[in-house]
Amino acid sequence: MSPHTARRRNQLFDSAFHDRFGQWPVGCIPAGGADMGDVVAVANAVGDGDDSAFYDAFVASGDAHAADAQSLLTAGRRRSARARFLRASCMYAAAYHPIYGTPVDPRLPAAFDKQMDAFRAAMELSDPPVRPVGIPFEDGALPGYLVPATGRADEVRPLLILTNGFDATITDMYFASGVAALERGYHVLLFDGPGQGAMLYHRGVPLRPDWETVIAAVVDHATTVPIVDRSRIALSGWSLGGYLAPRAASGEPRLAACIADPGQWDIADAIRRFLAALEVPDADTVAFDSLDDATLTRLATAIESDREMRWQIVQRGYWTTGAADLRGFLRTLAGFTLKGRVGGIRCPTLLTAAENDPLAADTPTFFDALTCPKTLLRFTAAEGAGEHTEVINRSLYNQRALDWLDETLRAG
Picture 1 (cartoon, helix red, strand yellow):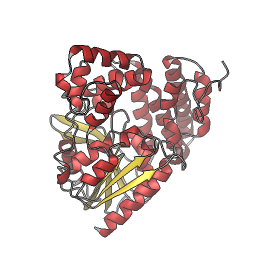
Picture 2 (cartoon, rainbow, N blue to C red):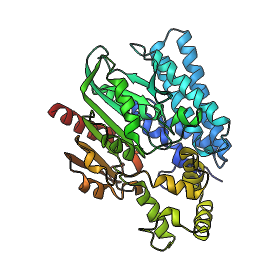
Picture 3 (tube, rainbow, N blue to C red):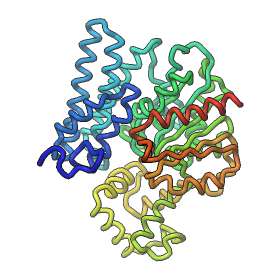
Picture 4 (cartoon, rainbow, N blue to C red):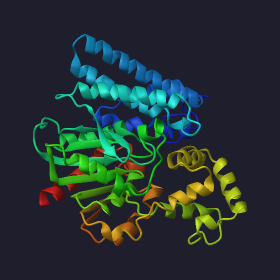
């Protein structure tokens, strides 16, 4: 088959499923995570291959960048080596998403370790060097990086904490929003929370809905850092982080601003739309625990028959939440809600909604429920930002979101 046969408009990979993950690095291009040629070369190498071909091609790209970085470093070209290490980390990060799930494929943590090794090398080549931190949390520590604002490492500056959702990691956040914020003069704190990155891949710690508990620990740590302006600490979350960030704001009064991309206040609502589409009786109100076995079997069959849904729910969802089956997954998601807590959000809050993002379906309702100072930003397909988290036009998202944050924190 020709490399371009049967592809959808703007699709780079033969498989639409692979294209979902393969285009992640495109959103990292403005921040130095990749170049278009990297992604096109990988897409051509994968062709009509399977998940293993996808993994191998991205890891090979990461290996090539890492080898170039090491050669440049040996030659004393530190700036160029740093850039290559960053590109290596981006390509490794894209490799393993199709093989998500339990039992954990050993290739996944292997690529993740390469990703984080390359990122660590790049951070150590920063001026000044940036090193990983451990954020005390319950019986252990959350892995993170506090990266100082570009050219202002010794200044007391506002801090932007970035939080992930289901399946991204520290490096993804760095490229997606971190670099843009650093260039605006923000110090940036990146971390893996429960169910994310190293906390999931190596420690098996599942995702949890009470993100106010997580962010309380993160803010506790941030306030010990001398260059952080304690009165101007903001939190931004993308993807499921569009729920986690405002959930944290509902219980963490030290936040000066909150950004949710997209704004989400009840994850179970999205599940209810899925139930309604499958004609489950009383889908809008049915308690997930009360679904009978026959209905659950029908739902499971529908999920298994659709590769995208199977990945989202069985591969990613069960693993990330620690659920053993569909009933357990639905029961867990029911706890991811801000209904009854939305009034606790007091800081200025920005919600985003991309035109073609199903997770933004309830953003206007969430916006109406907010009683704090609030702003809703919409992104459209016509401006190339209509997909989930504006993934291939992050520069537009960052410009608008950071303009809002600049004005908000200045006003404060």
